[in-house]
Image (cartoon, rainbow, N blue to C red):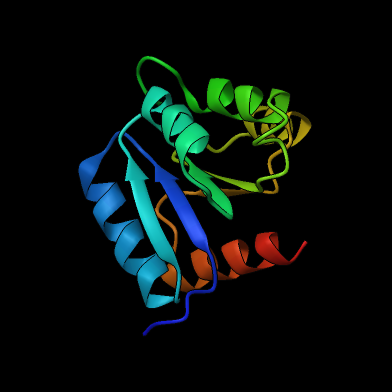
Length: 125
């Protein structure tokens, strides 16, 4: 039986991105569940237990900022570390995410080693 380093909820509306990141995370020893959008992620966070959320910013319905804000406002989910992964790279976005409570901000495309190192570090903090 495999011993996982942690259970990660991967939230991204792009199927190909979810598949690649899931493969990278599983290769790093993480158990991964996927959500195709923010509303689905928030529902999963209420019914399942996760050690970390890997969160895209630009999604329809509820974007990553909304998911992060709702998570940090909810007593049940506020202590779950969140790593943002986005194609948008600018200082304002990074600062906003950190103010909302994100642990790290990675820019797509991200190398598997960088992804796994960030997730591991965020779980240790």
